[in-house]
Image 1 (tube, protein in one colour):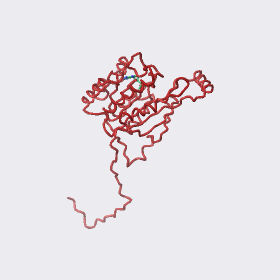
Image 2 (cartoon, rainbow, N blue to C red):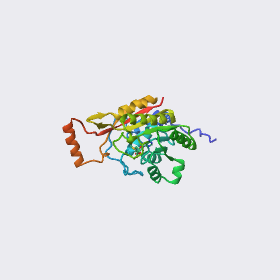
Image 3 (cartoon, helix red, strand yellow):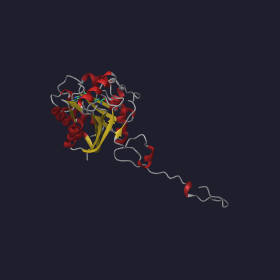
Image 4 (cartoon, rainbow, N blue to C red):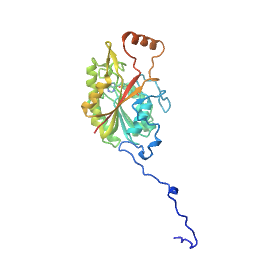
Length: 290
Ligand SMILES: C[S@@+](CC[C@H](N)C(=O)[O-])C[C@H]1O[C@@H](n2cnc3c(N)ncnc32)[C@H](O)[C@@H]1O
């Protein structure tokens, strides 16, 4: 070991010269470093979410009527998942949850009822990604069979349970997604829609790791001159299967809606004449399995 020469003068170290390296502090369900919490300005912690426009980069397109905007997945993944975690989406649609999982180094299992859609969405991923990162299952999410298929995929991916549940169901019959009787957009009554939704919620609950979160993305509807609060009843059904409610976020729909121009004027007229307000929001409701 080198010896200090006797005439070497050591400068006293001032406290201010010491660079304090704080340890990384995270929660059990996210990689956000709480010791650096001021560096996460992009993460929303308020209950009003406004996004100026739908994100189109990063493999996303807007070809599927009824898809959700990728910024929702980005917010949810960063707050409620760790790197490599598995997101389970029981209404996969055009695969927004899967694309964002790849972009953010997460994995995803998506269940979609429509065979043609499940097949075409697969083309958005590479063959390798379809083995290791994104598993797409064509099934009816209300069933025991879907649950068994998800379990088998979890097993292949080396996990027993998923770490985040995403539920973006049809908003009852507002958009008809197919002619299939199992399709939640084809229910004979809204009560039947709630019952089928609850079955999906129960499957999701059983397949989610304890302590982890579920997000329900949903809007309300009008029928027979009255408001039908789909969101609140679905929230109650989430509670029925065991979830506790953590937050109700109101998400601005500007830039997400398709109808503009003449239809917008027609709706404005109808609103003025019928004594109601035009929907400009939907909900992102957060739940936890405790
Ligand atoms: C609101 S969309 C989801 C869109 C998706 N989040 C996206 O960004 O593309 C609802 C989807 O649920 C599917 N669906 C309806 N009933 C289903 C069921 N019983 N099981 C699985 N998927 C179902 C529909 O075909 C539709 O693609």
